[in-house]
Length: 449
Image 1 (cartoon, rainbow, N blue to C red):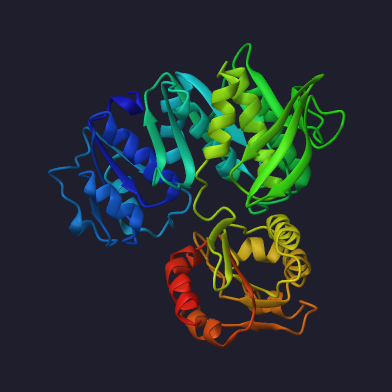
Image 2 (cartoon, rainbow, N blue to C red):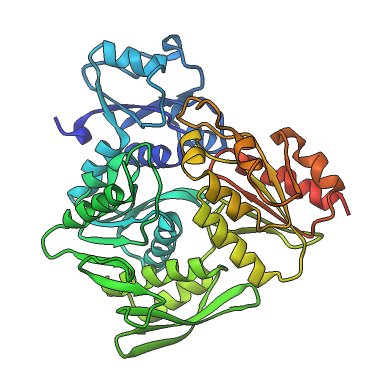
């Protein structure tokens, strides 16, 4: 039976950024949706307001079996869920149909016109920019986003079902289940070595993803990659080249050269060269969709941003930026951006490492990236789906950072640290729950005049 023909759906880990978007979509098409999540977060609270029943205890006794039965219920989970999860194991043992989120998502999008954004970095921002452009153009589409769009205050834009825009996640090779009409590969950087044997294995997987394009599909890719498609980047041999990048009054301005045509003085409402590249990709895909150029330009200028993507949270009394960066390359991108935007300001980074395996794989790279900041504060590793690895902790990074202005603290100690710290620019980074501290940090900085 098609995964879309069930009447009832139970999502395990429903509060996840990707899972919640799929759950909301299924709810929007008239299905009965319920689920479990460990955390009572802003995302789960939003889903509850929509009428979705959510429990927060890993115990089968809390499941409403009037909502869930094994004859017409699809159970959905993600790799982030532990194989020790009681609810997941109950459903498996009692012959429920149990599938991964990626399987359900693939069935939703593969039957329609699909745009898939892949790459180690930049997926969420690019998907969000494109979704904002498409929404501004009044297109009939739904976009699944791996972050919360500001102003929209959601990680899914439900505006019809003729076109689907999705992030194509390389973790667990889930993007190989997609068969898009339009695909973009933003970049390929080493990551997820708990899944891939080495960088070549990772690159081969991206190649397989590009081969999954539907007939007459088009691939847009970073000009540094040796794939067959329409290239983009900073290089002069790119089919679409980003030129004359400037930071002006808290926004980016740049030109885009496509073959011999130049689109001049484009204004984009974000900061950082990496975000200009994300905007470039959204721009060329929007052109491919035949969206009016004036609509594209207005949408780029009005883009509200995404929470936790170089998010400027405070300007006074101190500059405070929050970012999702959880990979050494992303940390360097943030550092390079703040160095250009705020030269001379004493900076402090508060970093929460994400996953024991990633910390182990990139130990030296993390240290090299972090030691560039004036002061470094490390929090405990956010484990997510993983069990601890012997000998790997935040102290493993701390010990090899060649900068004496470093410390390790508990998350609860952040306010006290900031009250006594003289840094003029604060940056929080990580893919764990450090984002939950943003409002408290803003309050602490504002009160500590």
